[in-house]
Image 1 (cartoon, helix red, strand yellow):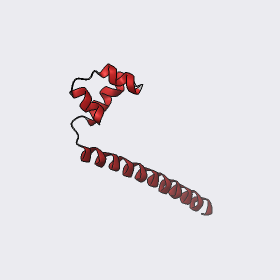
Image 2 (tube, helix red, strand yellow):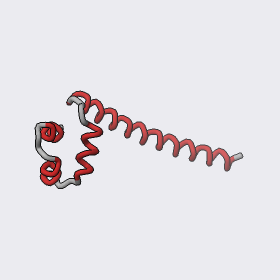
Image 3 (cartoon, rainbow, N blue to C red):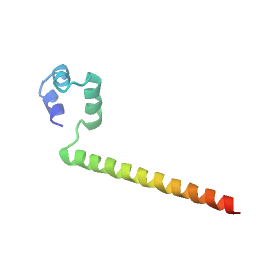
Length: 77
């Protein structure tokens, strides 16, 4: 995150926030979450978050299928 580096080099949070049209609290959240990370670590984090989202969606689909099958079986017997 180049913005975090700019802040470390002396650029104010107010200037960065104004330029991006975000609240200062958003910048501080990003700094807390991504501060100190290298680009490789940041990419890995994004990849893991995307994989996690896919797995959650798969789990939700399987859970719905399971519930549907249970409902069908309970009605037959």
